[in-house]
Image 1 (cartoon, rainbow over the protein chains, first blue to last red):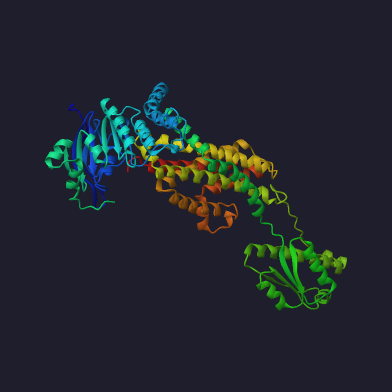
Image 2: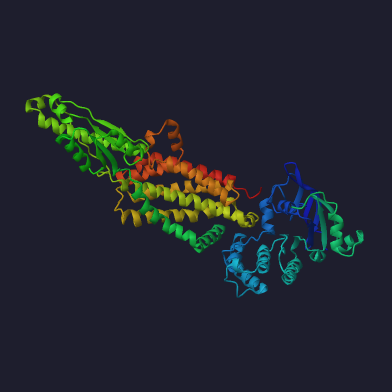
Length: 248
Length: 373
């Protein structure tokens, strides 16, 4: 693994009134890494991701994303990241092709790039029949694969995936992870949150968030050794058991 | 600019795919403009009158006939008991009671003077006062006829009377439609613009697509322009459809003034109204909130914009509210241009005010729209 840091945070914190959603989180993510960001519901994962993407301003703490400052250079950060939220966020009343071209277009791709990218993307996803169908008519798993592909259409340095496979069947999840590996092999850093522990095993490194704090951070193998567990499931239980916050 | 192209392409595609919005854009102006002006008519007809005639003379008969012949009144009851007429009053069957006293004819001839009693049901204040005014006019007229009949010529010439001759400028036949249709058109354009624009953006918030937009390097200014332009085009389309499709074809209303002036004002006005829509959307998190807020402002805009009631006759505080209401200025301008043929130099003040409003609302909206929370 190369040592180039693409995400680096130092005591990054977000408060909503008295509630500390993300409490002094510090970690580094390296280029090309698949970084798993785990935690129970309400642990503060989404808050952290939103800060890293420039959607939410931190209360205090420092962070650089792709080398840009999280406070002053949010627009530069936005050029260099992709984001796929919990909620499905392509336009359901546009077709597959129209969505690809729209998002590609607002990221500043040229007409030529748009054409080659969309052809390539549709081919990879095997959606040539569906290309002219409205996105709203596609099954969820397909939508998620499409949303991921659109999120990396501009070849970002990092892509943030907030529970991308929630509600998706195992076969499609497997295909989804194939896409993730492919992107990772192209040098895109993947920052992913998930509740599926089998997916956690696919990650290079994992951080575990409990009550807004990062409680553990290591490779899946080391974590299992450290907590004397057979699976990531057990590691998760071990760590999340101590949570005081109620799941939302 | 390229970003804007993609935004506009997307916006128009979505609008044209939404069947309900399409129907709203085409159906709403046609239906509202055909139905509303017919109903919003200040000319009262069919005022129910109850006549109590204690005299039953040829004079009292003549007066009653004259009232009915005017066409404004419907004789609801003709009797000689006040109590009975009052019952009609209480049951809301009569709007006016006129009581003709005993010896009406006799006294009138002998003493040259007499009194009539008129009672008005003032629940519907406008109807009552308009009815009262009509009735007074008829009685004055009746009075004159009698004087002519009974007075000897020399006496008549002694008492000089002032005759009032009315001439209605700019709307010679007091045609309420040519007065109301342009005003209603203004309301339509306002509603279509502000509502659709506000709801469109808030819908993106609800669905979550706005977050996907906010995470792109798109500029706030571009995003807002991408929302403004499509609804501006729709606003112009709705106005044109209403003005030519309904105003000219159905009501035969032709603008006296220049259409260019009218459209120039409309263009700026739409920017102001869309700015309000944008501003509402930046404050609302869901369509329900946006709808309620937009509804609140729309009611004020409609009632205090001078469409139904004259702003000059409002109390001072209300006039101040009207002065901050964009609808006021467009209703003013559209009537001046269409009915009076006013030119640009006559409505400069309104142009300046609406331009300032457009600037303020949109600046606030851009300022208040946050890509980062």
